[in-house]
Amino acid sequence: MIQINALVINENKDTLRLLEKFIEENFMIMKIIGYTTTIIEGINLIKLKKPDVIFLDVIFKDDSFFEMLDQLEFNTPKLVFISEHEHYAVKAFKHNAIDFILKPIEFNNIILALYKVIKRIKMEHSYQDEKINNINVINAQNQTNNYVAVASLDKIELIHMSEIIFCKAEGRYTTFYLIGGKKIMSSRNLGEYSAVLDNNYFFRIHHSYIINLRQITKISKKDGYFCEFTNGITLPVAKRRQEDFNKFIKLKE
Image 1 (tube, rainbow, N blue to C red):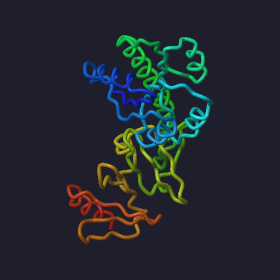
Image 2 (cartoon, rainbow, N blue to C red; image 1 turned 30 degrees about the horizontal axis):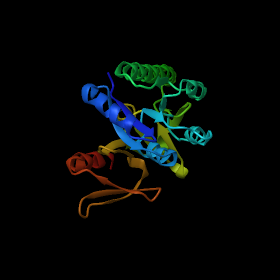
Image 3 (cartoon, one colour; image 1 turned 180 degrees about the vertical axis):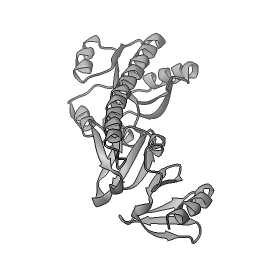
């Protein structure tokens, strides 16, 4: 079972304390990666932490929070509303909540909500896997390995590998930095792309980066290894990977 990363937004700390107590007994299921009492700070934390689920125990004056969620460049976190007001469930499900928990909160209700979150995530990944496999079959039939299928917010994009400058790990997400300054955030982790990117040109220089050798403009070996790319960004090569990277470069010379 996957561990769910949760962010809590509530106007008092009662809900947070109860969720923390829940985690003491169920740490394999969930961990809290952020907490705030305000909507604005909540949005900033969501962008920074990219949680799987948000527990909301606040009174919304308008729909601005949900409008900001719709503008995220990555998959919108699942929403679980918590309230002592039963009629608030209407608003919750209007905004596609995974679940609504009525106070007083019972641990069983939290577990049920988390299972719904996990089920939805698995369904989304299964759908993406099916689409990506279909694309890979088409590529195999056409005898081409020049493209990589990238599952982003609301679609799967085919990116020509020559257009990739480097890929950066963003927790469970991966950001593709492309020629022309374009960036695409994928809902898959960097490790998954290690297996599909052309190993003749792509090398993992760091646990956070896979780089395209064809996009390097300069390699500095002063005080470590550093690669400068066509977009002006410079990235370090991890010490433990420097020897393999040196061999990799020589093979391409």
